[in-house]
Amino acid sequence: MTQMKKDLKNLRIGVFRGGVSSERDISLISGQSVIEALLKRGYKVVDLDLKTKDENEIMKMINRNRVDIAFIALHGQFGEDGGIQRILERNSLPFTGAGSYSSALAMDKIETLKVLKQNNIPVPEYWIEDEGLPLFSDRDFPLVVKPHCAGSSIGVNIVKDVSLLQKALGEAKKYSTRVIVERYIEGRELTAAIVGQEVLPVVEIVFNKELFDFFSKYDDDLTQFIVPAQVPKKVYKLIQDLAYRVYKILACRHFGRIDFRIDKKNNPYVLELNSIPGLTSHSLLPLAAKEAGLTFEGLCERILNQALEEHIAEGFYEESAQKKN
Image 1 (cartoon, rainbow, N blue to C red):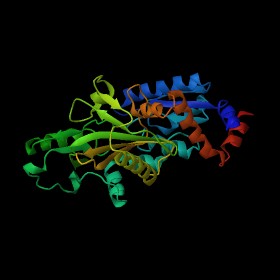
Image 2: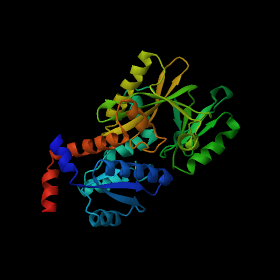
Image 3: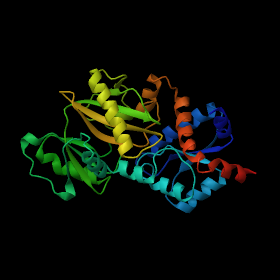
């Protein structure tokens, strides 16, 4: 392990941040945090502010900066949906986080819900708009309306009345081609992050609104994060076990975060998996890692090591050394 870390610090780490999605601003902050953390640990870091989806332009950026391995700190479309991952895979460049297939699956909330339901993972009751919605009655509300392929709760609304449903569907369609309608789970919001194969302490999120929306996630100083979450031990362990199962079912790697709602009877329901969780000062993964005794710098280094370990057997070290000689 010591020799591996020594060799790793001879490589050039390209941190992809920014991107072209609606979450660009958050990604810039996440990426800057990663850059500063890796620099503190003595790594050679290159700042890659991504502003295009064009493969030729991206590869020119990578080659110009002589990048050996990519740390992806991109959120949303072309960050978590498999787009940048496919380009890196085609060009044999190692990178952190889930591969292209797993990224696309986790980003697509419809496919994620279907796969999890098939594997007996508890998820909220849901309907897909383009597959036909039932005639909801008053007792069906509140409902949650969300885009099928967006992050940071952008375009998500809680609907309490049938008269507001069409407006919410229209709002969701601004960010995605397909829309999900879910049964609202009245209760508490929790999240469980994973690094490598380790499930970190569960975090409860206490916020002032009915929805943990973009403002609550990134700007509301009144939002509280309780870690470890104060729930019965059996429920706590169940949430960690479910998080790990979801992580494996969706074939994620290196790190990820699974969001839950638990109802008033402490029954947990999986909402989604974030294959590239936020890495800002307000982010939940670093908070859970800190509770587990892992500093932010240590967290970034561990993710980086996880990525590289998977490429050792593929001859990446030898190829990189030959390229430099």
